[in-house]
Length: 171
Image (cartoon, rainbow, N blue to C red; front, side, top):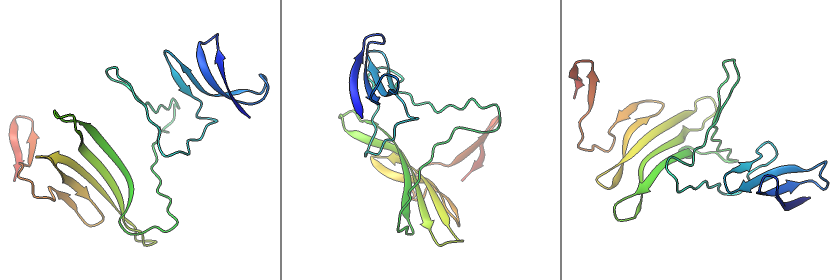
């Protein structure tokens, strides 16, 4: 059973799982200063989770591991298709903002694809694209057979700099 209640001690609205106060688990707590989600007991099975803030430098999502060993925090994208196919998009990260006309623009995108899903000979593709002159262009693409810089032949310089030399490698 689920219920909602106001907790006057913490000045927060809470979503509760459980029938009695002895067996209650707070799933979600919202106050004027914090929002807390108990992820140990909550699954998000909807289509999206949105975090929004009008203050500078937020919202911030932190994944933290305090283990003293060599373990690390992880972020998994899992496209668990019942019918996987070559070129399936496995994950996408978009960096968006508004232009001076108020239009939303994807300034940079990272796409990961399963180029070949054949058991034993799988290949992946990692592609970084940025907007150039108003059009998204592939800047770096890495797959099972090659690494490509500037796949879309954008008129840009390619430079590798070193300490004291501005053109250590210039093409």
